[in-house]
Length: 200
Length: 176
Image 1 (cartoon, chains in turn cyan, green):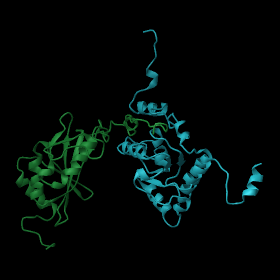
Image 2 (spheres, one colour):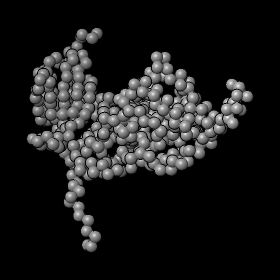
Image 3 (cartoon, chains in turn red, purple):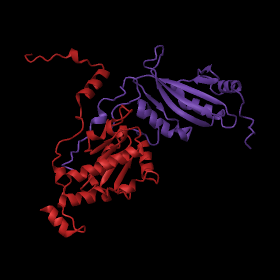
Image 4 (cartoon, rainbow over the protein chains, first blue to last red):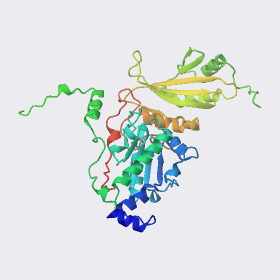
């Protein structure tokens, strides 16, 4: 049935769904918002430069205003002083929007397991694609853009219904068990000392 | 001219020592030397007089102002050591001036009245160690958020922090 129609229509008319068409358009024109804080920002710049050209994949311009972007690339470590700024810029981006967490520091905190560096932005923000590396090569970042394009293409909707389904935070718990145990042990508090006594 | 020195600027550290002995007669300065670096320890109670004397004897540039926490050092008598690294720009002579502080009295006068360049280093020392500099023109934290409660570079503060880095609201995808 569909093939007979296709043969009669020729090559100029495509049959598709609105979701697929909108997703195709959005996937192939992802304009990044470069949230570059550190060394991964340099790799982001080199990915956008002429040798590994990011605009081949649709990221034609890097708009520095979040109102005009649909992809936020968090490149570099995020300190606790910067995190509210990051969240505010994420909230200022209009729908549909996606987030790439580039580099080890944005994914998990990287080598900086200190009092000031947030151990992964996915604890506080929704992330779509993670790119490991310190810093990731431009080819890896381009691969992550292609992965994101496939993700948008396969699951995208025209009126952004798929985002409303993600109601739970996707990163590690805010104070996960390991973090609490590490903090307590470092402060000299041993868990064996506390005994849970339900009676008294 | 860069090579000329005025008559009142001594060259070499020994004239400096005698000169300072004359300028500060009733202050006990302990001189020591380690690997060609001359150090002087002066009491914190008379800080501005000592720093002015150092400046008048020729050390007109404050290169660095930092602090050391000697809590786990072993054979230290005091807890905090505030270090002033001084430089005589004309002759190239350097001096490390140190003073010691103990808890609970961690307030010393600010060196901004002597050298303007002590402004940010003193804010950083307050930020990291909690040493209060009285008389500072803009005394607040330099690097950490304003409402941060602890002083991280003290030896009794863990590297990973006490949970401040994860005390932020979580944004899910559905609500953003």
